[in-house]
Image (cartoon, rainbow, N blue to C red; front, side):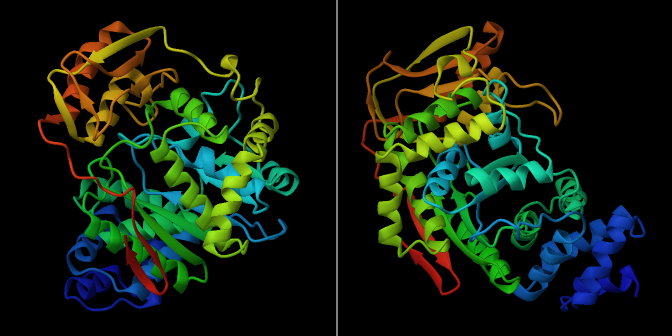
Amino acid sequence: MRITDIIEKKRDGRELSTEEINFFIDGLCSGNIYEYQASALLMAIYIRGLNSRETADLTAAMAGSGETVDLSEIPGIKVDKHSTGGVGDKTTLVIGPIVAACGVPVAKMSGRGLGHTGGTIDKLESVRGFRTSLTKEEFIMNVKEIGIAISGQTGNLAPADKLLYALRDVTATISSVPLIASSVMSKKLASGSDRIVLDVKTGSGAFMKTLEDSVRLAEEMVSIGELTGRKTVAVITDMDTPLGNCIGNALEVKEAMEILKGNGPEDLKAVCFELAARMLELGDKGDISACRELVKNSIRSGNALKKFGELAARQGAEFEPWDERAMPGASVRHIVSAPREGYIASMRAELVGKASMLLGAGRKTKDGPLDHSAGIVLLKKTGGYVKKGEEIAELHTSSRQLLPEAEAMLIQAYEIRAEAPATRPLILAYADESGVIRY
């Protein structure tokens, strides 16, 4: 078998066999296939596509290219959740404790921030003492004993994905739906959970900008899950506007605590509660109506908040996460005012995320430092009416020098018009093995 024959076959639009896909991934990881050859095949895939079987085979080969996590000694159905990334997306911090408090084990391996989107591990590390690097033994023991663990991904989890992603980034093949789907799902399969809920974001702050593209991606990932023996469902949620009112690591943890207390912004609450209910449904806790009620009860009873406290204590937090001493506060706070009067017709969520990065909440380079206290508190969002000079946001940072550029970018994100905007639902569609339901 030769890689040049495989490239030629896909270039001409023909279907690759399981053996050919395995040969490609094995050769990539061993160094027997060169980067320029892999790049050529990626471009052929980008142009010609992959069918469902090919995509599932690619995903399985990538998942098996390194370490896999064996969760079989943890009793019960393990349900994982993955978000495709967004601005203000702190859902894992809310959903994990809710689901664990309702009796479904949560063994969550999460990542750091990527571009303008935040990462769960960065957020948790803003809690003083919170340890996100766990051994496999600690990870499994925590789930067995308290029902939940959240850890950074092992360095050798799906290494083929890391190699392919680096090549996709420099060969203009990032936006291929089969390649995105296999990238996401390979890490989910390697992480060991039995069933998977996907939160596919769509809109200006998401990687998938249109609903049609998001639905295609959701269908592809659900198909991969089913073909590889993992029951998978997807919820397509709005990311035209940042989720919740806070963007930035410590700020988002504080907002997550408010949701677990029964308070907090309604948009964040709605998305978190729906995703948690879908996880409980996959965990065989009843139909979706019963699971939605279980979610509400976990909040009303205080059990979800208590579960987050157990998680934090088990992973080294010095204080309870809702204690003011648990997280840093910004030394510089600056109010942003509305430049004109009218309705906030829309918000370019990606620009809001980038403005937060400029304040220090995101990394400029892969291994760059973070200011965990930095970020933005949104005081007005899409649909709200503002007068000229009214407060619309508060910037948090450790350096006044960062304020002008971040403020200018944030103001650019707000579109203010005389007419009130049409409302857009937060939850746009749902996909499972039977098809897609649009709301």
